[in-house]
Image (spheres, rainbow, N blue to C red):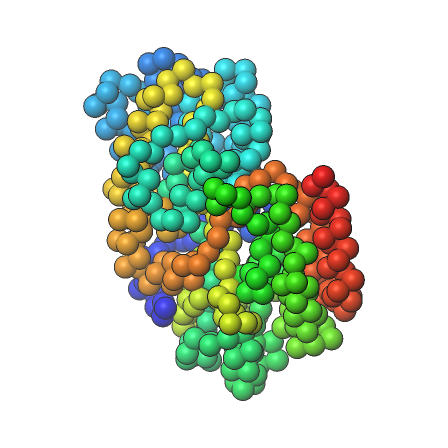
Length: 420
């Protein structure tokens, strides 16, 4: 998907969220550091019978004000929007809800669901017939242990940014990508953020291409932490591929390349392809790069499936007005107009199908949407903490020349023991 300057201006200043989204899950994606804003006279915000208190990151308060005003006008129930810092909102929510001082609703990432549920601070949502109106990956991500806990509003995933002046066409495969860059005279055709401790979030699409997801699925289609798939035959094959792309192979993967170096390589034209998220598109366009956004080229015949991070809203288990909270989320936040307002504030693909279709008229967003067509939700299960702890370090060791079979087997043993 070709991106020109005009398209990028529509997309706006891309924010380091996520995380996702991914950043909220402990991956290496950037996080929002905005300071809280004051709203009304509620301070931190407390649940009450005749009002709804909604915690939201500071950049999206204005985007939700219209929905809050419309809900109060329709129902007489005031909606107080309280700007909060993304870096502390989850922990504050977990700490305050049991005391009765927390909000009725909080914004958050889908992969918080396991932790929030385990702490007993969230209540299930009732989407009703509107469930069919959401992107499939958004609905899956919003569901934990058979219950929908999140009203989704945004979906984010990584893709390949391509310098179309160096590589005019999308790569047909991972090997084709490297060959095209080499033919153009580049010594490092492809860059992806790694660092000394690796970055499994960014390498996950390649792992899935070997048929090696982190966890298997349960009967309801959710992740089952008792079914660790890292130790499958596909996992071992992926480890061997990592080794072949490391320092003793093509050197396409390099732990000396962190996020800043990856960006510099692409912006300076040293690399034609950059595997990253939408938060970096603005910098590429501002640097005058003729940017195209492509699906991630697979190293096998199986499509590469990146993680999808979904952002949305949770209802507090201690809310004094759960019915109104559910109504506000489903019938006001879950509308195309509001989700498009949130898109304008954050520049992430809306979770509602109608809003996503309209927003995808932007070529940048359309490129990321296409790259995320096969995306899978980042696991929300608490067991992921044990996976992240060992996963990146093992991958970095393999990239740097460690025996792939031995190192990967130890990873599986360590993660299995940690989960148990």
